[in-house]
Image (cartoon, rainbow, N blue to C red; front, side, top):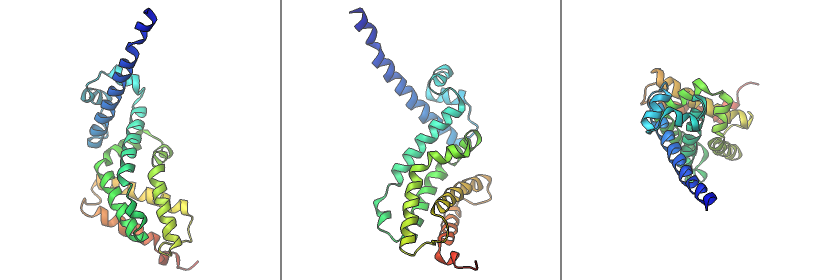
Length: 203
């Protein structure tokens, strides 16, 4: 009986931990999306937990930002899941994908700036593996259909997509790109880069 009684609080503690983690991730996403320099203390306060509790789940700021980025990209990937993209012509699908991707990234661009400050570039890229697989499939289809250039390596074109859209977030944050022009700049830049005509110049 003693052993059974001793084990009973464990599920409750686990549930409390899960609630705390969810609250911390929600607060961190909200605060870092508003201010990439938001402190761990501010995040803990917004989550309704103490710093000791926060550090018990995320031992460093890097670990917290890493978890928040994974959480946010996962939510974004679910939003970007659109079967219609597989049916539209590749250039049209790319424009739609850029529209949806930028809508999400712009909302959380300061969170991504926070990630840039504390996480290695390769780690940030790893978090985007799932959504970038969608980009890879789309570009591959466009190449097969003759809508996109085939003279450059597919992985390089996927990397270019990733780099351009995140560079746009930085340009938007600094004011070098206006809010109302970013989306069209992204679409025109990417479609121009992918155009078969772009690969028909002199060798």
